[in-house]
Structures are given as C-alpha cells and as structure tokens.
Length: 489
Image 1 (spheres, rainbow, N blue to C red):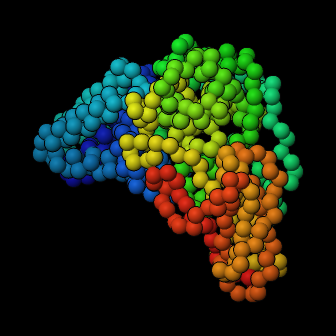
Image 2: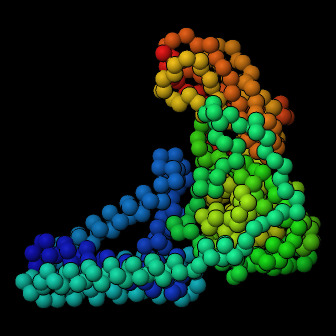
C-alpha cells in the first residue's frame, strides 16, 4: 500500500472509532465518549503544577487546548499506525485494540456514568478495528477515493449524531420553566457608589455571562430541574433527599457574594460577584441533625467532582443556590443547584451541579484536589488588584489608579497605593456592601512625565495587611502585592 493511502487508512479508522464511541455515548452518558473520558482522565491525572500552569497560561481555554492537543496526538498515532501497516494490517489492528482498551479503562473510572457506559469504548474499539481492516483489505490499487470519502462521511455523520443526541436534554427549557425566583429575603440594593466603573474598575455585580468559570470536567452536565435531587446523609440523625421543587418552596434568601478561584494569580481575573438565591445549608443540616464528631461537609457534583468544606464554617455561611442575578443558575454555573460559601476558595466549597452532601470528617474523606497537594482548609486571602492603568500603557493628563480588593468574609478596611517605591497613600474606597464581597477603590496621583511603577495592598477589618512575598497558588492561594508599570506622557 502506498504511504498516502496507508496514512489515510489509519487516520480514518481512528476518526471512525471516535465517532462510533461518541454516538453510543449519546445513549449511555456523554461522559462515556472515549475522547471525553480519556480527556477527563488526563485532567484527573494532571499534576497540580501542570494544572496551575495551564490555567495561568490558557485561562478558561485550557480545556480547548487539552482537546486540541489530544486530537493532534491521536491523529499522529493513527497516521503512524497506518504507515506501520503497509504490508500487514496487524500493527494497525493492535493499535486500535490498545486505544480501545485505554478508553474502556478511562470510562470504567468515571464516577458519573453507569455500567452500560463501557459499551461506548467497546463500540469505538470495534469500529476502529473494522474500518482499519476494511480499508486495508484489498490491494493498494483497489481502494478508490470514493471508499475513503464514504468512510469519512459516515464517521462525520456518526460523530455529529452523537453530539446532537447527547445534547438532547432540554436544560434550557427546564431553566425557563423555573420562572422568576423571588426571595423572601432579598439582598440589599448595591449603592451606586459601590464601584468606580468610569475609572476602570469592574461593575460591582458581574453579569452571568462574564462570571469566571473554572471546571474539571470537559463537558457541562446537562440536568433538568425536574429530575434533579440532593441527597443529605452521613453523620446525621435524619438523612433526607431534597428535590428542586422542595427547595423552591422554602423561604429563599438572596445574598451578594464574591467568589474567588484559588488559581487566581496576583492581579488575576478569576474573581466575580453575583447575587445568589437559595437556602441556607445550615438550616438543612440542622433539620437533618448533625451528629457529634462531624467536621466536614463533603459535597459531590454530578460530574464526579468532590469538595470538602469545614462543617462549622458552612453551617454559618453556606448557601445551596438555585438562582444567580435574578434568574435560575445558568447551566455552566451549576444548574439546577450549586454551593456558594463566601470566604472559602472554590475548590473546597463551590461545588456546581451538586447532587450529594455527606456530613463526615476530614479523616474519612478527601476532596478532589486534596490528594493533588492542595490544602485541606482554604480561606480566601486578603488581596488587591490594579485594574487601571493597564500594564505598559500610556497615560495623558491626570493619573487615576483604580482597582479591586477582597478579604471575604472579613471585609476590606483600607487600600493603600504607592508609586515608584515612595510613601503609601490611602485610596478612596467604594461603598462597603458586605464583608462577603469585594470592594472597589481609586486614587489620583500627581506623577511627572516618564515611566512609573505603582503597587497596591489591602488591609482587612481584622487589621491584617496582605503579604508582600510572592507565593504560588499551591497549596492555598497566592500572596503578593500587585504592581503595574506604565508611562505618563
């Protein structure tokens, strides 16, 4: 077989295998798609330093980069298998079987799919072997361009059908059916002077579209509110199951909360604020009757992610949220329900698509990120950020420096700014909305033309001033003063 046909044979067999697996996964759970399952396994096995590098380098595009990289690697494997099989189909067949077995192992280790999910990688293996041997069967001259085009077309149709069928759950219809959420206890109105939007800070409330998002799974769980339930069990006197409708009928509260990702670098973007609507975790757990000795609330997502939160902390501050900024939670932010706990980094508290609350101990259970080197308890650190001017920018006229500070749940007491290593000056603060939210600040500086460097630091209401030392996110969040350099013209 000629090299071009051999390479094309291996590549098309690979594409057909992935398409067949994706199609079958539409019926047994989209996470069982071998491509997604292996990708999720890669995420699970990624060391913390590499994960942190991916987030800091690629941001929310880290999963797209992973999937693209996988596609390139798999394409290379398919081409190599084809070229190695120019005289005999055995090498390509072995590669197809090995890749299929990798998919089987990956799917069997997924916590969010059932036993039938193994049918997807098995179908992928069978399709890969069949297509490879079919295209390789005849002599090198007998296989026409039409055979390859038909195979490619069928694979494309199968893959597209799998994607369409796998996404057929009408999540948006379920969200619309929820209708308007009216909390019995609404959050206080945000004062007009809470931000300095005209000076370059973010708006105080982050829109749902702009709210930062960091997940571990490659596909967003698609759950209808009508089919969702939350199990409360473990070290409780009265285990319970709550449906969405039961939560909806309870006394809903609305709280304005700032959430922060532990992977946020100094000056980073992974912090946002929204008005969340839901019920108090403390009310639910007290009804269940927490037993003595319990110290952890272990939450599990529909996608298999887990987080362990200090029980005493969530009893006081935690929320089971079903709404966000006046509407049901968007699918990508946890619909039908998620946890919101002000003052704890998301990896130990902010479980989206939550389906299980286990009252237990830290000695018995470990959340997803703990075995990967992250801290067990992760309170949000007092930090600040400069939003204007932009680094390496140029300014004409008056120099206004503006930014954001946060210290949930202690609250921000003051922010100080200095230029070129000079004396610290206290900035003007925006309205103090809540100790559980960020706080905006601004200051005008009289700077001569030329290059300048400005730094900021925040002090919380306990009297603690953020540390100057730069520390990496692992194991419990960054520290350090944010600084930017710019030119005054």
